[in-house]
Image (cartoon, rainbow, N blue to C red):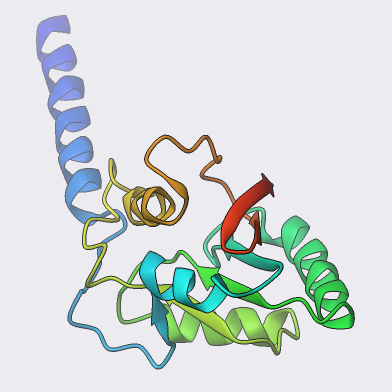
Length: 170
């Protein structure tokens, strides 16, 4: 009897695990977003001649967005005052709800600045149970180097001077 119960529990855990692998964080790379996508090369071009520039990466799906969005907005306001260029990049799942998620985020937080998305065609692997930040990490590796030690959390602030990363913070 105990063997049957343990077997049933084990089978249930395996089924749940398989469902999690196949259903969690699904993407649709054919989805065409209204938001402009960027990759490391396009950002490098945008910042290469800037004395100073910021790249800020966030996610609308991050549960901490209620704590991190106001400091992001404050930083953006300061950068505007100082006339320092900045690029806000969303690391979200590339699927049919992407535009809706970003639109809702902008409305919820009265966010009026341009938001870019990471290029899903360049960084194809993302999502799923084990690859949830692969696109983000691949982008950072190309932007600042293979051996970066930038945390893969949100919001990450990257500060560039003359096209070179000089500091980062989260």
